[in-house]
Image: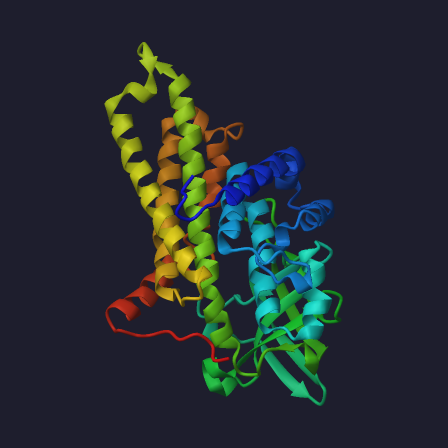
Amino acid sequence: MNSRYFTEEHELFRKSFQEFLQKEVVPHIEKWEKTGTIERFIWKKFGEMGYFGLKYPEQYGGLGLDIFYTVIFLEELQKINSGGFAAAMWAHSYLAMTHVNAEGDEEIKKNYLTPSVEGDKIGCLCISEPFGGSDVAGMKTTAVKKGDKYVINGSKTFITNGVYSDYLVVAAKTNPKAHNKGMSIFIMDRETPGISATKLDKLGWRASDTAEIAFDNVEIPAKNLMGEEGKGFPYIMQHFAFERLIMGINGHARAEFALDYTLNYMSERVAFGKTIDKFQALRHSIADMASEVEMCKEFNYSVADRLGKGEYVVKEASMSKLLSTKIADNVIYQCLQFLGGYGYMEDYPLARMSRDSRLGPIGGGTSEILREVIAKMVIDKKEYKPAAK
């Protein structure tokens, strides 16, 4: 236990969550990986146990706990070997719900945040577009105000929970000529006429539903605007720091899981009269990987601690995602190699893990984009500011 960040209560929560996952989730993972559909009952069980409300206010059904409960939630989800299931859970709880909590008014929080905490409604966050990707400011989806309504037209892609969610948090241009200052955030129900979703076939994250979503003259009430009109871009950028840290934590957790599994395998696999964990070439490679993972973990905990105290950690969170996802990919690639032919077999966890891990350097801002963000701060001394209250 890292007593600097985790208390005895944290560790009790970790143990109980591990037991919950093994009992309620793991028996269904193979089915969900094959069907690409996570059955609704598990969302309700997560809600009943309070797992979707860890960081949210008590008045909306949450528990109001510190950020290290969220860190544990993310870490343990990575250790049941289904990146898709993990993504569905945290995309709901920490992407869609983050915007609802931060920008939604009281009515929106009552109608969406509380049922989200309880597992009765599933949310998705719609930012990326077919021709935009990481270029958030270049999005083409528009929201035109007509009387007491907004009319939404455009499309989004790579949206986790984009097929089976109950509501959508959508970024759209309310003033296309104002570039990033003309963007706003809206919430809308799935059954709103004009919304259609197409399920995407992915290399990994097979359990989660990822969609391309089209908006064809979708009319929503003006009250479905979240926060102020025109402030969507700073809202998104502010929450991106959290999303990138989530991806960084996911990276160190799955790398740690891969290492633990591989070390156990190596302690049992015999070659040339001895277990393969006794061969120096492999031992030194393990030493390198364990050192990198531990460095990432300690850095990520430090950034989480600062974020939990209200600091604006966009640079550090970008660094977390950049390096942690890269190191996770390298570690899992090498661990698969240490299993030899078995690493390539679907009966062993490294095959799926290698596919799922590959999304780390892509989703939530590609490594190439992150390098430019970091370069702007380090070289050009650019300062990113939180959204004004």
